[in-house]
Image (cartoon, rainbow, N blue to C red):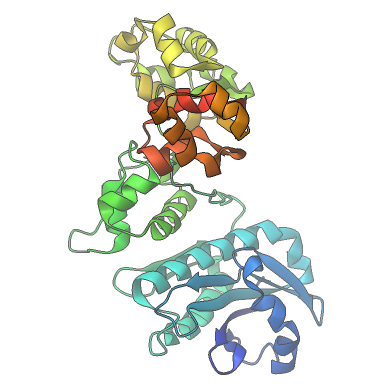
Length: 389
């Protein structure tokens, strides 16, 4: 079990400092100083879970965090909320890694919203957190700690909880798995509630940020938090140019998901005009085609099944996966010969920095064209080598 819980930061005058730990004095100052470059590391290591062996066959596990903002005296703050575990617990590293990732996310939200790290008066809460997390996990393998009227720290240190938050991009769409309004406090005006009210399974991260008037970086952190708790799934922006491919799980629609899929997807769930075999057939027909092509080849499909639900269900259940288009631009001499339309040339130049094989069509359309991929797809494909993955 956990031997110690600790909070350290880069202090403006003292440099790396061990501010709080519980039990008190568990880690000596000399030991901390010898490890300070690892616990409060250079910026490129922040955001990664780091483990280091210390004296006595114990390990420290933490995820250093850096938040950059002009409001801070150094234009940034750096901190790490870490745990010390005995060597025999290291075989359960994935559980502690998941816990540390979640704590880092929650503390980042607390700082962005309420300055709980940078404000010395509020930072006292970190000492209480160290003690409460240690004692509650030791007692019942989970903790439930109110930070204030609107924020809770909830941790379950068990093998059943291994839902790692993905890297969330501006063009991703959060899809609710529960009624998110159940977690909204009517009188609260926190950023999380604004974000939750903007999630409808259609808006992408960028649009949620604009709709809720919350910084996009903060939106991504909150979405990772919701994902961790199993409240949302992350999917793609729905558009006719999307391509999907069936996965090895597709057979589950004939067995485990058969009844659920028919009831969820059929337009008339009381007297469905399709069964699981029909859904299997349509998913197979969809594979490696654009949505546009699929609709043309199956004109009656949308009368029987809601197409957007069909795609969402397939991706959430892992029956299909998205295939993305990436582009590498021809050199300028070839481009001048192949493109003469001034508006098309302007489209290519506008997106030029993204035509290096590292950025997909969703990202390009999100950044420059409000997801109107149909306006950029043709001119970009005429001027680029296209590949799928």
